[in-house]
Image 1 (cartoon, rainbow, N blue to C red):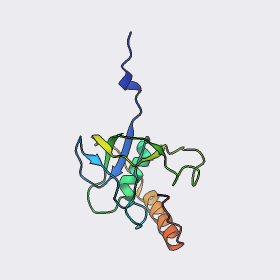
Image 2: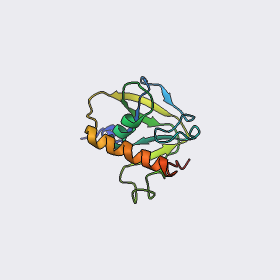
Image 3: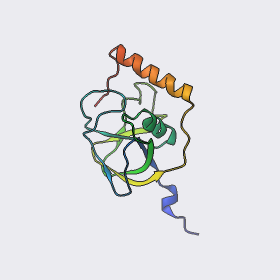
Image 4: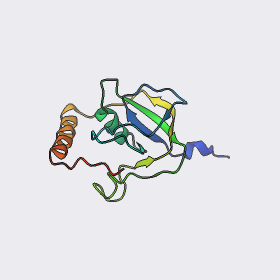
Length: 138
């Protein structure tokens, strides 16, 4: 019996409000969902759907919240904004790359966080901003 190697492949997700289609590239040079700092020189993604849901829910703008299955096109590293800074190790399985992410598909069936949990997160981010601690390690 021969196993299909793709069934063991790592999946990566990106939460956004951008309307994209398979084959589109997510590139650097956009602002973070979490701060109003300069455009970022990294693209961020995760291998957990929950982390991508947060990205979609907290994304700036008024477009529909979306989650995409993405494929990195270059080297990947742990996202230092959550790895060790907030959570020892990388339990959120969050990553970043300077190279584009290729959109493979859109995840159309997912459930967001409860409204009160989302508000807690937004309040926490607002508190960090007020304290000047909304820093993105770019």
